[in-house]
Image (tube, rainbow, N blue to C red):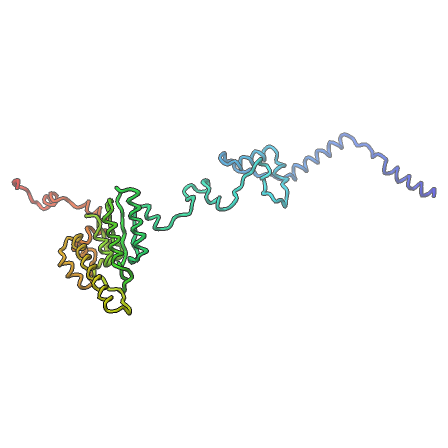
Length: 327
């Protein structure tokens, strides 16, 4: 028992005994070595590029210069994004849509979804008729014409036409003749100057709309086609003979009205228009201009060519012709 007690006392004394004192030189050497190892193992903090207009980079640069430990000791597996804890009240975009609409992202990007194509053309005062004249097309075109006059009754309206009228390409009737007359009457009621341009084709009632533009403002593309023809009777089906006769009389009335209007806008007589309308009468740009449907043919570079044309006096001088008297 005494042996066990002595052993425990010796162990206690051995643990509690103070270590031998070290000299000041040894202590300074150890501190110097510690500083050297710390400076060697200490990582180098990359300095971000300075941009005075970027508050995020400026804040990171100032924190890296004053207290780099804040950037080195970033918590791992944290829910917050890195380096946001150094800001007092960080702000983030809630959704990607807000980033897309922000002005700082791109000032020229629209802040709202773009409108449909007819609305974009309407903003440029352009009405495009690119389908046969069915009720839906007539409704849209008449509404656009009324809207453009309401917005500015003095600015011109541009109507681009690429339509087969009230029929399809194969001649099948798809709409009543009144659809074309409705757009024509709306054009005649407008106070604005109307510029009509044929792009592709202008057949039947669409040819009437082309010729109904303001005098001197009716144009046609070089390879566009115009065609005038008699109105067609819609499919009668199993109608009784009396109903078919009523429809035939209505078609004759529409044909006479079409002849009168075409003669009015083309400058031809009603007999001439009626004769050429007995069968489908196709016209290219040159023939349409001769017939009076349009005033000018649009082709690229014609303004420069006309500007380079010499005057009659210059032609006479170049030909050696001299004016002797005042006649």
